[in-house]
Image 1 (cartoon, rainbow, N blue to C red):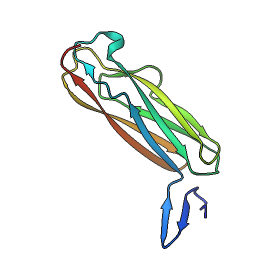
Image 2: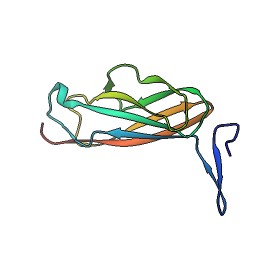
Image 3: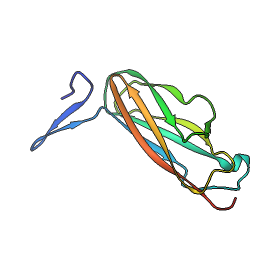
Length: 130
């Protein structure tokens, strides 16, 4: 049964509320070398939004990176989902500044669809060398 907010209730032996959308953040597994030059300090991050709702909705996808890091283009981008099972990816290029210390750095995606907010996180590693 689909509820007014787009979520569904599935009844088998009990009831489970299924969110109308799911979000994941796919980030290249390859670490960034601390001494890398320009293009080698960039990584692709893709926010994947999957619809489980028949409702058409507009929203936004925001990628948050550590201070001093940059994105090619806007940090917040529009998204429109139109049907159940639709899958959309929103791509961002993340630039790690030269001189970033070795370590693990959090990248966060926030997706707003209707009155709901969904979040996903990933970690980008900076390692010795280039």
